[in-house]
Image (tube, rainbow, N blue to C red; front, side):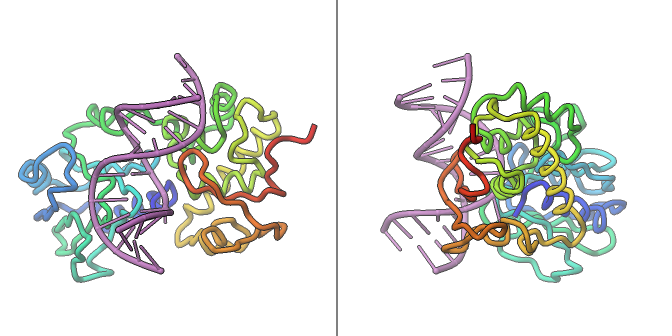
Length: 264
DNA sequence: TCGCTTGTTGATGG
DNA sequence: GCCATCAACAAGCG
């Protein structure tokens, strides 16, 4: 699930269920703790009240009036409230019992990602690493400046969190398909117009997919709706989609809409 | 049993 | 040095 729009949804869920609430108790699977032992996490959180959380790319930073926890959702993580699901699940890795009697849980089937504890804002950078500007907040001028400086393939650039943060495999394919750009296009080969379209598509796709209750896998004219199906075809022109590994990930594109290089 | 999977990092090789 | 690929992490599914 988790790319930028999904984590944005988790942020909203955290606001709804946890902000303003104090932590009464903590249950945690120690195997998802990445920088502090179980006792330290429990001791740091209990009694503290959650404040407005912050999303940076695919990271969720959950501030309290004391320390913060940083959540990364890997490929299979999400948040679950006890209001929606009274019982804990075997894949729940963290349960925050709040002072309203409800629980907010971090669920992650595979344990990629995890939980980090920080005591103040100065520690965050050392954990999230060198993140580029958030893909939903980056300005057109900053984005285009970065694209002009970038080498290598287009899809690799979009998925590089230090280039822009928040785009993963599914949305990289969606952005490139809607922008009609081949995933292997060398970034330096893009024209001014192509850079402009790339930015516009990235922003509109992420904004739409971040809207409340959006199911991007159900958007009628999106690649996301048809990717993964056998013998799948382009939603725009009906051409059979290509599938190959690009930048290390399974990639879908339309050979008609996204030619390898510009006609010259 | 093998291959595959929406993420990230570090090693490797051209 | 740059860039692309691959293994590893982990767990489930077909």
